Image (cartoon, rainbow, N blue to C red; front, side, top):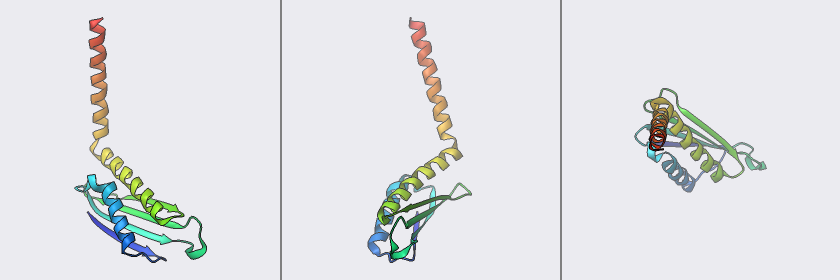
Length: 126
């Protein structure tokens, strides 16, 4: 999993880069075999004016899917926007993989089959 970090209209030091890498490795670590590349863009939209203007965009390219997964968060604090974007991108990647593999559908069918067998067993015991 390669992580590329770009900044726009702000100064980001190595501690911010390490923080982004740590958060993304935590959020996307379980998908390391599927995630090909992660592009992170950090921007300060309003500059020194303040307000909800710290933008974190994340683009995740997956090996088996043709379309990348995008996530974008705008918040007052830079680290909070990074946290929220990493969390959301982790959920989005999980959802994209579930859609592609059909794993969730198969899991629901197995659970429904088990419930029907249990209800048949309890009905026959009564």
